[in-house]
Image (cartoon, rainbow, N blue to C red; front, top):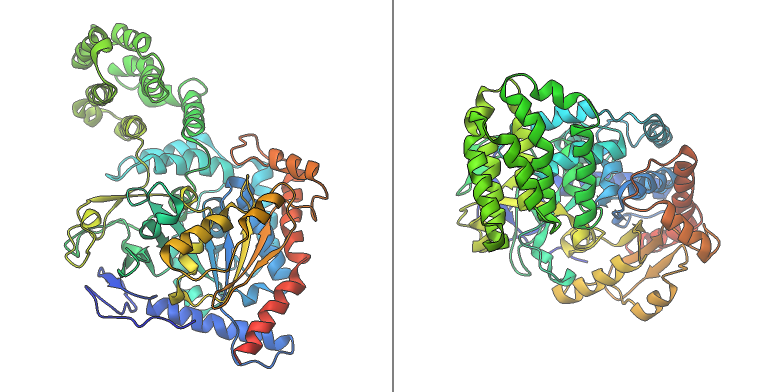
Length: 579
């Protein structure tokens, strides 16, 4: 596959080493930094092939895709990478692209300089963390209070500390840009973290081409804004800073891997399940520890705040789940009446009670938002000794009410080089888990600009093990992207008891090798496959035992080990064909 010619367009058509530059880039094709990284990685691939006795001049461009799936995907991704290394195939991987839970594993490995050098050590560390339960509620709360000071706080910040941290038992303060040195030298596969822009995502999977948003060590942005429209990027170090008209207005620190994990892995279940999980966290905050007392009982109004915090959360939760808010409003009114700090809030609550039957849902939402602003008034927050904690409560309740995730300053705001006027007109973009579109990062590695020749697709999905393949085939057809033929009827017949390996090939398309996590080879029967899927449910809140972690590692490793010869044969075939 040949790379389309890059054309002069907009701010910069040929992105080069930024050295801290705050420029944005509008261009076709991949950046010069990525090209250099892929070239240097290619030398490592070539060395690995020659060690096997292949006298070739160039190795094929091989991308490994690791799908979403919460903690199951995190652990299974570790198993896949460990086994690829063990059987000598990891050095042949050009890029590693992850979605959702798999990015948790990727973050952990890329945050360490030797993460890919000793995957046995990384695997043992993963087991230790999960076994020892190194999640601490007070640490999570401290992190949330710090995050609440940001003007772009959203439920993604909450998710980072309350859910992803509790699942992975790990907080990572390293940043993706720190991987530049390793990736440029080709010592690690080039990392691609996938998300989508919620505002640009349409209802159908096959129409989300312009919604995909990628993070790499060098640049973050939209690979394409349409079939004939260049992509738009900003230096990864400046993603999140404020831009206007293509100029940097306010620089902000690059977000860390812990936040990136939450951006990539925020769609582990349906909305009601997510709400229930958030409710459990707040129950622990309000009822299960002395943290709230320490935070709130520091001045006179703290007594009332402590009394009403649970009711305020219940009000928002009940509204979002279509429950009866009237009893909660009455409780709030009785607790706030007579307290001068909450007189305006009490008055508004009284009005809400009197008119509860005559207001629409949108009006109710607006009134609850106004109530939050009166309870957590500017005066109260600013004079408080724990203002960050009150900001955390207020912002989290407010974001819940509006269901706001992934708030990030839009770097192409009012940029004249962007033809998409909707995108250029938004001050913020809202990034979400790419699993909401396709639960694997095919759209980021399939475009010809990345020259991918082989894709190893490790699917850790909970349901249909072929959904990512079928969705990608539809997506590629709609977007005119080469993809091998897919017999959907046959895959549907095998979905309950899949094999451990499928290969999809076509004329002038990449070769796709697909590996369902639980299959009739590593599980043995349909009954065992179903049991595994139940045991490792995406939103299982009970921690895995060490035995369960080991079983999941073994299942994922087996899919590599049992098919290493087929993988190597295809790599060798393509390498010899191009030499």
